[in-house]
Every structure is written in structure tokens, then in C-alpha cells.
Image (cartoon, rainbow, N blue to C red; front, side, top):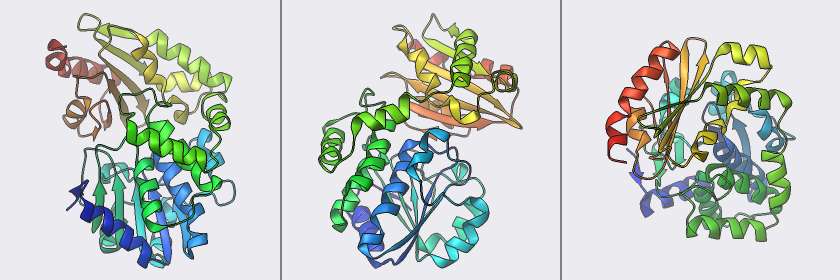
Amino acid sequence: MCVKSSNDAFRAVVESLVRSSNLLLVTHARADGDGLGVIAALERAAPAAGKKARVLVPDNVPQRYTFLFPETPPADAESFETLAGAADVILVADTCAFEQLDGIGDGLRKCREKTVVIDHHLTIDDVGAVQWSDTSAAATGVMALEILDALGWDITAEVAEPLFVAITSDTGWFRFANTDARTLRAAAKLLEAGARAGAIFTRLFQTDRPERLALLERVLRSLRLHHDGKLAMMKIRKLDFDETGARPDETENLINEAMRMEKVRAAVMLVENTGCVRVSLRSREGVDVAKIAQGFGGGGHARAAGCRVSDDIDTLAKRLVQAFQGALQKN
């Protein structure tokens, strides 16, 4: 069972990595900059510490993050059994939920005794024998830096940059409410180690394709306000991808556009997929979207959460509007 934020759990993670010689580094499906940045940084740091390391992502890496793996593209779910068998430690970064480990969840259950988890989300399953969960951390990248410091592994510019990606991705380039002194101290350390903030900002936020902007136009056109303007609802249908040529991974951060409106306390974005609808939730202080997500089988943070639901997109939208009624009456 996971122990939240305990010194014992932190030390257990460090000790597991000290004893390891062959690491398998894993993050969740529909991977984001935090999870990908952490496993990329650990992969780069491991050889100088005398460790072998491979990275695995259950599905495709979003295009904006492929630069993190220029030499060794991540393996996919089909490679898990082989790579897990060769590893003496499997480190899972940025999730503690089997629901997010598409295609490898059953395999991880069989390897639980050599699985280590570092995560900062509220949803906690019994994924690994060692689990460090720190919900006060703005990003798993902050936790990974603290682990590297404890290990004494070299933090070169090549290691610092993916960790800077991890931290800036989950803090909205230090704009979100989760940005605290601990976060900024970590960022300063990474900049001192050689992370190039300007180059990273350009790579993450100034390389959009025209197709993504066309999708953004569709998203904004779909926006509807509910509960006296406090809830913003947006939808992306399969047809929108077909007609704009945008990719599913290009939906990242589009939900934040709704939070630009002063009166909006929470935003919902529904993305129609084959067999399910992917739901992203964001909120301001006082509205706990993790609780809303849990009611639909998902989870996450109080201000950022999500779930996948097998339902018609329009029916699900109505259910979510109803689910937010109580939470928004107080705000």
C-alpha cells in the first residue's frame, strides 16, 4: 500500500534505485510532459551511475515531446513482458492508477514486487511494492529531481532539460496555483545545471501546426456556458479531427482556453474517441474536479482531473453539467 509523502517511502525509492542495475522506466498512457520528462531524465542520468535503462510508454508519444527521446524511442506496450523480465526495477512515473496504464496493467500486477512508483496524484492503486506519493508536489519532475539529488547522480544539462519540461508542463509555465517555492527552487537548480528555458518554451508552445489551430477554432465554437456562466463545456467530435486533420495528441492544453474567462470556475472538455469519450476537467480554487472525476471512474488533482466514459458525448455532457451543480453553488 502507498504511503503518501513519507520519508520512509522516499528512502525506499532511493534504496531501490541504488540496488538496481537494469531499469525499466514507464509512464502512463496519453502521456504528458511531466511523466515523459521524468523517464527521459532518468534514462539520461542512469548510464553515468552505472545503470542500464529503457523507457516504455503504453501508447504513442505526443509529437511535441518526441524531442525528449532523440536516440532511443520509447518501447510500446507489446514490449513490456520482455523488458520487464530483463529489469530488476520497474519505475512507474506520474501515475498510481491501473486505469492509466493501458496494455501493461496486468503485466505490472505480475511484477509488483520489483515495481517502484513516484507520483503526485490523488488516485492511488496498489501498483508497486514501493510507492512514494506526494500530492503536495506540483509535478512528478520535482520529486524526480529530489531523488536524483539523494542518489548523487549527475544532473547535467541533458538531464536538467527534460526535468524542466516536466515541471513547466504541469505548472503551465509556472502560472498554475500549484507553483510554490519548492517548485521554483527546483526550476532554479535545473536552470543552473544548463536547462535552456527559452528553447524549451519554443519547443513546447511555439511549434503548433495549422491543423491544431483549426481544431482550436472548432473547440471555441463548441463552447457553452452553464450554471450562470461558472461552467464552460467544450466538445471535440471525431468529425472535427477528420475535417481539420488534427491529431488526438494535439488536444493537450486546449481546455485551458476556457479558463481565460473571469467568471468561469470550472471547465470541461469532451473528446470523442472510438468506444469512449475522454473527459478533461479544470477548475479554480474551491472547486474539486477530482471528486467529479471519481464519480465517473476517473481521478487526478483537485484543480485538474479526467476520466474516460463509455457514453454518448451529448448525453455525457448533460450528466457532467448536473454533476457540477452542487460544487458550483458554493462558488
